[in-house]
Length: 308
Image (cartoon, rainbow, N blue to C red; front, side):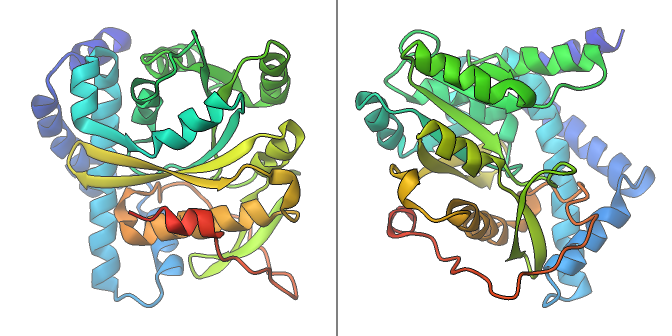
């Protein structure tokens, strides 16, 4: 029953779905008050320099955006390639294709900014064909509910990427290397680190924050080039992703340097448009402290020179 209802909604045109999104926003924000305390606390800690009125504006903007992401995700299975290209564009794909031309694979830092579910359409913007001449991969955590897990995997397969569970991703990518397949793999690196995982503590959004270091660790083990997928929201249902080149010599970087760079780039993305980040997750559930001496967190010349 639920599956039929979601499929029926997904088939609606985006214009109708955005009317539904407006209703979802009202219910989530004013009626259910979905994680209002979490969002409000996160914004207060991240933007202490703003007034309560300014933070409330960001908060309402987040709930409107989050409602949009829900209906846009339902619609993805029924979007044509042409419609997709009208709603999300990619810049800097010459960086990705250039590495593929050299036989190099890529680790991509990404985050829960904008519509992260539509980013799998990167396959439409490369000279390389997904599953044929290159692999476009995503890492996911299987959901406990098998129906929802299958449902989201189906949606995320719309543009023919490959999905690897977090627990097996290193083994899966090593297998691709043995088969001499080039790939780009996107890692969502902005959540709270899993219990027991190594972390790097940095000043992020005005507070000490434990950053996930697994993405950098995998890049070092694999010897891959590293990029950042920078998401812009330019209007309702209009997104732009800019590929920013971080390094093609990960072995030459110092420990956690890439994690530090990612933290700065992500913070820039969030401060540019705060409402499009996923503020409803408990990012700072467990307080941490900064080390006695903090590293230089400025991005390298390659990333800064790519600013549009």
